[in-house]
Image (tube, rainbow over all chains, first blue to last red; front, side):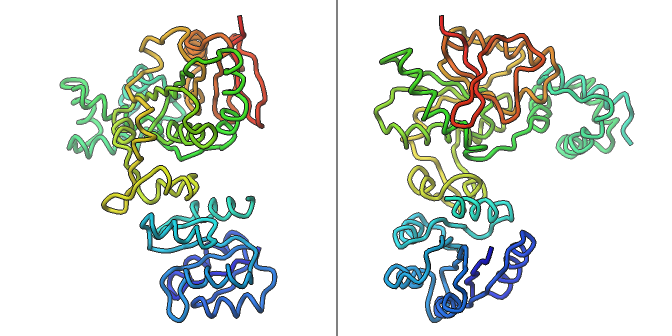
Length: 120
Length: 271
């Protein structure tokens, strides 16, 4: 499955990208929300999005809002962030996130969250 | 180097207290436990620890050993299907047999609380406040019970099996990136200590018993005895839910095997 990994941190992108590749996924990296829109336009077969919250240019919440308005993606979006306050989580869910991964996390959590949203 | 005598002593001790059986070929599995005890009780060698147990064993030392030998690995909604079977099939069937009765449930190896809380969330999501029920949750490990009673879970704990929608609904964020279960859920669960091998079971008491991933660690005699006690603890028509892949094979327990919502469950015959 093709996974769009949206995170401005190179180290996070490297670690999570490696985890995803080990699981057999193809990874497309974007460094913020604006870059993610471009990557979506270039890749019509994205199966799931992993989306950081705090990023330059366009942050994760703004990307969710953009997607709700413009419907550029129909696949599940999982927030993957250090923002772990309930009100933030609720806000992300209200704006179209399907699941939420709080950093730091382990590979088994990544696997089960992706499984959950992909299998519906 | 740990001698056979020391291995045998601790293997016998754990078996008598918990029923968990370490055959001689698996004695190596005690290595890490013996090392953990040596650190806890400041012993330099396995022999020092052994002598300490022989000469001045305390209740605290016994409890510590039980805690580190019982497998507390668990997560929310483990295997999923039992919880679907509970709300979609078991409860509706019980409501027909026992109309207007409070549904009494028992999670008999509740570990750190994820199983009873998963049961509670499943019931709340399906029935709201319209179902009268009570849930007793027990475990042999005092350490596991303490965590269950506190109801406080780490960021990692709540990301294992628990959908985020249920996390924000039934838990509140507390200090140190932890989450505490809300009282609307925890108030329905009563936690207590229970040893499935030595404590006395209540009879004809429960409509549903969850006993998952416990009997796999027991020898055939203990499995028979525990299942027989659970049979009598169930009300007629009541259900036993075991772990995926667990069965009554090797016992003579007369529970009827049924597949509900893709989950194998065992029902005491209705009278």
